[in-house]
Image: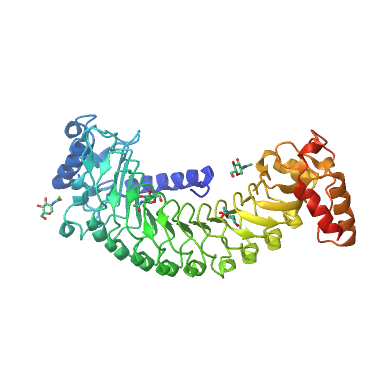
Length: 465
Ligand SMILES: *[C@@H]1O[C@H](CO)[C@@H](O)[C@H](O)[C@H]1NC(C)=O
Ligand SMILES: *[C@@H]1O[C@H](CO)[C@@H](O)[C@H](O)[C@H]1NC(C)=O
Ligand SMILES: *[C@@H]1O[C@H](CO)[C@@H](O)[C@H](O)[C@H]1NC(C)=O
Ligand SMILES: *[C@@H]1O[C@H](CO)[C@@H](O)[C@H](O)[C@H]1NC(C)=O
């Protein structure tokens, strides 16, 4: 459940900036002496534990930083006399690929100036499972590592090492898509006060979400999705005042959606889908002024109504609440969601009319209201029906019908009986409650009279009263 990728232009300009920075580093230190021989030896041990596609001792020469290979970056030390290893990147070409029997490169943590370590798609051999381990805590206290990324390693196994808590300079910690990494999140991760991004998604982690993560006050992104975390969502996560993205979807979380989420005023993306959450949504969600994605589908909320307050989240683009047992009407306030592109409410127990105001939402392009108990005449005009096309699904609402001049194939709703239309017309003329009568020009496949729903007829007599 990822938010949209940054535009390639941003990525490109970042890459250019980075390149300039690298060039300037090298120009600024033209007279740097060769790498310290002990550090060179450590680097060679790292290369040999992970990659064996060449003879690194021969290839490296006396000073690897004088002609770094892809995946190796160097920077001058603080005393500027020597170059040091600053970044190592393994797994995906052009970076060195990993050998079949690669082991987790413990030696890398002895490189004194290492800032970034990437192991992406490195441990992939099902016959040689590698262990996720770190050096003893006492060896890590001087670490300057800011970014550790261990991603897409199907043959890396073990628990998250508790020594991660000693990597006090970490700003970005990604341990993601390593199906064999299991067990609990070490409590000590709550001590990594400099963390900005924590991504532990797509592993096999279990146990509760540690409440101490609420102490990571600089956190901007927290992604724990696609694991087996259980228990309630800790209220302390509400302390994460900088948090923009919170993704806890696809776990075994239970309890309610905590009111604490309404304190996350910087949120743009909130996903709690595919869990065991139940009960009413907390009051105060409209305080999330920047929220663009609210993704809560597939939770057994249990017959609760949709709060009208959801219509007052001004920047909402996607609202996904399908398969969750919501009952009662679709709030009329949803007409206020002027940025909405996707509204997904299928497979609930929603009843009553479709709010006519939905058809005035100019950005809407995906609307799924299927499998509910909605009834009445579909209040969408021909332009709206055309715009949504196949992205509109109203099927599985036996009480809904469309007027014969607005039939669109595939919407999944039958044509209203003439008496129903007449009845809607006279009702619309008398009051504005029903909304405007559909005036389309497309006339395709009028449904056989035999398929007319008794519910629609019942509606008519009801309106005539
Ligand atoms: C930890 O540090 C000790 C001494 O400082 C050293 O001998 C040992 O090799 C280090 N262990 C690792 C795994 O780096
Ligand atoms: C999570 O829930 C699924 C389905 O409800 C269940 O099969 C699985 O055993 C649970 N896992 C844990 C770790 O509780
Ligand atoms: C809808 O309500 C009925 C009874 O009112 C209930 O049996 C059914 O489980 C509900 N459906 C959902 C998806 O909650
Ligand atoms: C609407 O949701 C149903 C699931 O209930 C799904 O089968 C269908 O493909 C969806 N329709 C659209 C247009 O997304």
